[in-house]
Length: 307
Image (cartoon, rainbow, N blue to C red):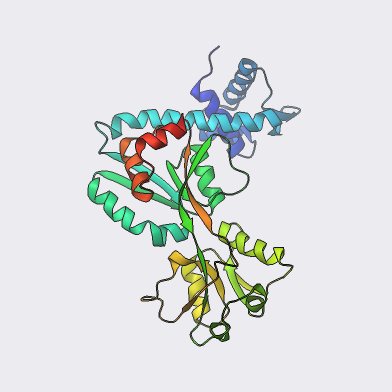
Protein backbone atom coordinates (compact mmCIF):
# COMPACT_ATOMS: atom_id res chain seq x y z
CA UNK A 1 0.00 0.00 0.00
CA UNK A 2 1.53 3.39 -0.97
CA UNK A 3 2.21 6.02 1.70
CA UNK A 4 -0.47 8.73 1.82
CA UNK A 5 -0.45 12.32 3.05
CA UNK A 6 -3.25 11.43 5.44
CA UNK A 7 -1.04 8.84 7.14
CA UNK A 8 1.65 11.47 7.62
CA UNK A 9 -0.93 13.91 9.01
CA UNK A 10 -2.10 11.25 11.45
CA UNK A 11 1.40 10.75 12.82
CA UNK A 12 1.96 14.48 13.19
CA UNK A 13 -1.43 15.08 14.82
CA UNK A 14 -1.08 12.19 17.29
CA UNK A 15 2.16 13.75 18.56
CA UNK A 16 0.60 17.24 18.61
CA UNK A 17 -2.31 15.81 20.64
CA UNK A 18 -0.03 14.43 23.33
CA UNK A 19 -0.33 10.86 21.98
CA UNK A 20 -4.10 10.96 22.57
CA UNK A 21 -5.52 9.16 19.51
CA UNK A 22 -9.12 10.23 20.24
CA UNK A 23 -8.13 13.90 20.33
CA UNK A 24 -6.07 13.48 17.16
CA UNK A 25 -9.07 11.87 15.42
CA UNK A 26 -11.27 14.84 16.39
CA UNK A 27 -8.73 17.30 14.97
CA UNK A 28 -8.55 15.31 11.74
CA UNK A 29 -12.36 14.89 11.53
CA UNK A 30 -12.10 11.13 11.47
CA UNK A 31 -12.45 8.22 13.90
CA UNK A 32 -10.07 6.77 16.47
CA UNK A 33 -9.95 3.37 14.72
CA UNK A 34 -9.27 5.18 11.45
CA UNK A 35 -6.26 6.99 12.91
CA UNK A 36 -4.91 3.80 14.49
CA UNK A 37 -5.33 1.94 11.22
CA UNK A 38 -3.46 4.59 9.22
CA UNK A 39 -0.62 4.71 11.74
CA UNK A 40 -0.28 0.92 11.64
CA UNK A 41 -0.39 0.92 7.83
CA UNK A 42 2.40 3.49 7.66
CA UNK A 43 4.55 1.56 10.15
CA UNK A 44 4.05 -1.61 8.12
CA UNK A 45 4.91 0.15 4.85
CA UNK A 46 8.18 1.67 6.10
CA UNK A 47 9.09 -1.31 8.30
CA UNK A 48 9.60 0.47 11.63
CA UNK A 49 7.57 1.20 14.73
CA UNK A 50 7.02 4.92 15.06
CA UNK A 51 5.35 4.90 18.48
CA UNK A 52 6.10 3.32 21.82
CA UNK A 53 3.01 1.43 23.00
CA UNK A 54 1.67 0.46 26.40
CA UNK A 55 -1.15 -1.95 25.73
CA UNK A 56 -3.37 -0.21 23.20
CA UNK A 57 -2.10 3.27 24.11
CA UNK A 58 0.56 5.28 22.30
CA UNK A 59 2.89 6.79 24.88
CA UNK A 60 5.94 8.21 23.07
CA UNK A 61 7.98 8.21 19.87
CA UNK A 62 10.64 5.60 19.28
CA UNK A 63 14.08 6.84 18.27
CA UNK A 64 13.27 5.98 14.66
CA UNK A 65 9.87 7.59 15.16
CA UNK A 66 11.48 10.92 16.05
CA UNK A 67 13.25 10.92 12.69
CA UNK A 68 10.05 9.78 10.98
CA UNK A 69 8.13 12.69 12.54
CA UNK A 70 10.70 15.15 11.20
CA UNK A 71 10.45 13.62 7.73
CA UNK A 72 6.64 13.66 7.87
CA UNK A 73 6.74 17.37 8.63
CA UNK A 74 9.12 18.06 5.76
CA UNK A 75 7.06 16.07 3.25
CA UNK A 76 3.85 17.83 4.29
CA UNK A 77 5.59 21.21 4.19
CA UNK A 78 6.90 20.54 0.70
CA UNK A 79 3.43 19.40 -0.38
CA UNK A 80 2.05 22.72 0.84
CA UNK A 81 4.76 24.51 -1.13
CA UNK A 82 3.65 22.68 -4.26
CA UNK A 83 0.04 23.75 -3.75
CA UNK A 84 1.18 27.35 -3.31
CA UNK A 85 2.84 27.37 -6.73
CA UNK A 86 -0.45 27.82 -8.56
CA UNK A 87 -1.36 30.76 -6.32
CA UNK A 88 2.05 32.39 -6.34
CA UNK A 89 3.03 32.04 -9.95
CA UNK A 90 2.65 33.19 -12.80
CA UNK A 91 6.05 34.73 -12.69
CA UNK A 92 8.84 35.39 -10.32
CA UNK A 93 7.59 38.84 -9.34
CA UNK A 94 4.75 37.58 -7.14
CA UNK A 95 4.50 35.36 -4.08
CA UNK A 96 5.73 35.29 -0.48
CA UNK A 97 9.25 35.46 0.90
CA UNK A 98 9.61 34.31 4.51
CA UNK A 99 12.74 35.62 6.22
CA UNK A 100 13.91 34.51 9.66
CA UNK A 101 16.37 36.62 11.61
CA UNK A 102 17.28 37.98 15.04
CA UNK A 103 16.19 41.32 16.49
CA UNK A 104 19.47 43.12 15.81
CA UNK A 105 19.54 42.28 12.09
CA UNK A 106 15.84 43.07 11.66
CA UNK A 107 16.23 46.40 13.44
CA UNK A 108 19.57 47.61 12.09
CA UNK A 109 20.91 45.81 9.01
CA UNK A 110 17.77 44.81 7.11
CA UNK A 111 15.75 48.03 7.05
CA UNK A 112 17.45 49.49 3.97
CA UNK A 113 17.50 46.08 2.28
CA UNK A 114 13.77 45.70 2.91
CA UNK A 115 12.98 49.16 1.54
CA UNK A 116 14.92 48.36 -1.61
CA UNK A 117 13.37 44.90 -1.99
CA UNK A 118 9.74 46.05 -1.66
CA UNK A 119 10.35 48.83 -4.17
CA UNK A 120 11.67 46.28 -6.70
CA UNK A 121 9.06 43.62 -5.86
CA UNK A 122 5.88 45.45 -4.79
CA UNK A 123 3.77 42.33 -5.37
CA UNK A 124 5.86 40.05 -3.18
CA UNK A 125 4.62 39.60 0.38
CA UNK A 126 7.62 39.82 2.72
CA UNK A 127 7.16 38.07 6.08
CA UNK A 128 9.68 38.30 8.93
CA UNK A 129 10.05 35.82 11.78
CA UNK A 130 12.22 37.29 14.55
CA UNK A 131 13.77 35.08 17.23
CA UNK A 132 16.98 33.47 18.50
CA UNK A 133 19.29 31.66 16.04
CA UNK A 134 18.11 28.17 17.03
CA UNK A 135 14.51 29.16 16.23
CA UNK A 136 15.54 30.66 12.89
CA UNK A 137 17.48 27.54 11.87
CA UNK A 138 14.61 25.30 13.00
CA UNK A 139 12.31 27.24 10.68
CA UNK A 140 14.76 26.90 7.79
CA UNK A 141 14.98 23.16 8.43
CA UNK A 142 11.20 22.79 8.61
CA UNK A 143 10.67 24.84 5.46
CA UNK A 144 8.58 27.51 7.24
CA UNK A 145 11.39 30.03 6.66
CA UNK A 146 12.86 30.51 3.18
CA UNK A 147 15.95 32.56 4.08
CA UNK A 148 17.61 32.71 7.49
CA UNK A 149 19.99 35.48 8.57
CA UNK A 150 21.74 35.04 11.92
CA UNK A 151 24.89 33.84 13.61
CA UNK A 152 24.95 30.07 13.68
CA UNK A 153 24.13 28.00 16.75
CA UNK A 154 25.96 24.79 17.57
CA UNK A 155 25.28 22.16 16.36
CA UNK A 156 24.04 23.02 12.89
CA UNK A 157 20.96 21.15 11.63
CA UNK A 158 21.38 18.67 8.81
CA UNK A 159 20.42 19.69 5.29
CA UNK A 160 21.06 23.42 5.83
CA UNK A 161 23.59 25.36 3.75
CA UNK A 162 25.06 28.56 5.22
CA UNK A 163 27.26 31.26 3.68
CA UNK A 164 28.79 34.36 5.23
CA UNK A 165 26.86 37.60 4.72
CA UNK A 166 28.96 40.08 6.73
CA UNK A 167 31.06 40.48 9.87
CA UNK A 168 29.60 41.58 13.19
CA UNK A 169 32.02 43.71 15.23
CA UNK A 170 31.43 44.66 18.85
CA UNK A 171 31.82 47.73 21.04
CA UNK A 172 31.29 48.61 24.69
CA UNK A 173 28.49 51.06 25.40
CA UNK A 174 28.39 53.15 28.55
CA UNK A 175 26.59 56.30 29.74
CA UNK A 176 28.29 59.70 29.16
CA UNK A 177 31.03 60.59 31.66
CA UNK A 178 31.38 56.96 32.74
CA UNK A 179 34.78 56.22 34.40
CA UNK A 180 35.58 53.59 31.72
CA UNK A 181 35.78 56.41 29.17
CA UNK A 182 38.93 57.65 30.92
CA UNK A 183 40.70 54.27 31.09
CA UNK A 184 42.40 54.30 27.69
CA UNK A 185 42.85 50.79 26.23
CA UNK A 186 40.41 48.64 28.19
CA UNK A 187 41.05 45.19 29.63
CA UNK A 188 38.57 42.49 30.62
CA UNK A 189 39.33 43.31 34.26
CA UNK A 190 38.34 46.94 33.72
CA UNK A 191 34.95 45.95 32.31
CA UNK A 192 34.34 43.27 34.96
CA UNK A 193 34.42 45.91 37.71
CA UNK A 194 31.06 47.20 36.52
CA UNK A 195 27.56 45.64 36.35
CA UNK A 196 27.09 44.02 32.95
CA UNK A 197 23.95 43.92 30.81
CA UNK A 198 24.19 41.22 28.18
CA UNK A 199 22.22 39.23 25.64
CA UNK A 200 20.52 36.04 26.66
CA UNK A 201 22.80 33.05 26.00
CA UNK A 202 20.36 31.76 23.35
CA UNK A 203 21.85 34.53 21.19
CA UNK A 204 25.37 34.15 19.84
CA UNK A 205 26.40 37.61 21.05
CA UNK A 206 25.51 36.65 24.62
CA UNK A 207 27.43 33.38 24.54
CA UNK A 208 30.48 34.97 22.82
CA UNK A 209 30.79 37.67 25.48
CA UNK A 210 30.32 35.17 28.29
CA UNK A 211 32.91 32.82 26.75
CA UNK A 212 35.55 35.56 26.54
CA UNK A 213 35.16 36.40 30.22
CA UNK A 214 35.40 32.70 31.09
CA UNK A 215 38.49 32.32 28.90
CA UNK A 216 40.17 35.02 31.00
CA UNK A 217 39.09 33.34 34.24
CA UNK A 218 36.68 36.18 35.07
CA UNK A 219 33.07 35.90 36.22
CA UNK A 220 31.32 39.16 35.28
CA UNK A 221 28.62 40.70 37.45
CA UNK A 222 25.63 40.19 35.14
CA UNK A 223 22.68 42.27 36.36
CA UNK A 224 20.40 41.72 33.39
CA UNK A 225 19.99 39.55 30.28
CA UNK A 226 17.87 40.72 27.36
CA UNK A 227 16.97 39.61 23.85
CA UNK A 228 16.80 43.01 22.17
CA UNK A 229 19.57 45.61 21.63
CA UNK A 230 17.18 48.53 22.15
CA UNK A 231 16.30 47.22 25.63
CA UNK A 232 19.98 46.78 26.49
CA UNK A 233 20.73 50.34 25.35
CA UNK A 234 17.84 51.76 27.36
CA UNK A 235 19.08 50.18 30.58
CA UNK A 236 22.68 51.24 29.94
CA UNK A 237 21.47 54.81 29.39
CA UNK A 238 19.56 54.57 32.69
CA UNK A 239 22.81 53.74 34.48
CA UNK A 240 21.97 50.14 35.36
CA UNK A 241 25.16 48.74 33.82
CA UNK A 242 27.45 48.62 30.79
CA UNK A 243 27.11 46.33 27.77
CA UNK A 244 29.10 44.77 24.95
CA UNK A 245 26.95 45.30 21.86
CA UNK A 246 27.17 44.88 18.10
CA UNK A 247 28.57 48.04 16.48
CA UNK A 248 25.68 48.10 14.01
CA UNK A 249 23.29 48.70 16.93
CA UNK A 250 25.02 51.94 17.96
CA UNK A 251 24.46 55.22 16.13
CA UNK A 252 26.10 58.25 17.73
CA UNK A 253 23.61 60.62 16.07
CA UNK A 254 20.66 58.74 17.56
CA UNK A 255 22.07 57.27 20.78
CA UNK A 256 23.06 60.63 22.24
CA UNK A 257 22.73 59.37 25.82
CA UNK A 258 25.34 56.65 25.22
CA UNK A 259 29.03 56.47 24.40
CA UNK A 260 30.85 53.78 22.40
CA UNK A 261 34.26 52.38 23.33
CA UNK A 262 36.24 50.10 20.94
CA UNK A 263 36.78 46.58 22.33
CA UNK A 264 37.73 44.68 19.17
CA UNK A 265 40.94 43.62 20.91
CA UNK A 266 38.90 41.88 23.62
CA UNK A 267 35.89 40.38 21.86
CA UNK A 268 36.12 38.61 18.48
CA UNK A 269 33.89 39.39 15.54
CA UNK A 270 31.07 37.04 14.64
CA UNK A 271 29.62 36.33 11.22
CA UNK A 272 26.08 36.93 10.07
CA UNK A 273 25.24 33.88 7.98
CA UNK A 274 22.62 33.37 5.28
CA UNK A 275 21.08 29.92 5.71
CA UNK A 276 18.92 27.93 3.30
CA UNK A 277 17.52 24.42 3.33
CA UNK A 278 19.38 22.55 0.63
CA UNK A 279 16.32 20.99 -0.99
CA UNK A 280 14.00 23.98 -0.55
CA UNK A 281 12.59 25.51 -3.75
CA UNK A 282 13.33 29.24 -3.93
CA UNK A 283 12.00 31.72 -6.46
CA UNK A 284 14.15 34.29 -8.23
CA UNK A 285 13.16 37.13 -5.91
CA UNK A 286 14.54 35.16 -2.94
CA UNK A 287 17.97 35.06 -4.57
CA UNK A 288 17.70 38.79 -5.31
CA UNK A 289 16.94 39.43 -1.63
CA UNK A 290 20.03 37.42 -0.67
CA UNK A 291 22.20 39.46 -3.03
CA UNK A 292 20.83 42.70 -1.57
CA UNK A 293 21.97 41.49 1.85
CA UNK A 294 25.35 40.20 0.61
CA UNK A 295 26.20 41.44 -2.91
CA UNK A 296 28.86 38.77 -3.51
CA UNK A 297 26.23 36.00 -3.33
CA UNK A 298 24.63 36.07 -6.76
CA UNK A 299 22.04 33.50 -7.75
CA UNK A 300 24.71 31.48 -9.55
CA UNK A 301 27.03 31.59 -6.54
CA UNK A 302 24.27 30.43 -4.20
CA UNK A 303 23.16 27.73 -6.63
CA UNK A 304 26.67 26.28 -6.60
CA UNK A 305 26.44 25.94 -2.81
CA UNK A 306 23.03 24.26 -2.98
CA UNK A 307 24.08 21.49 -5.38
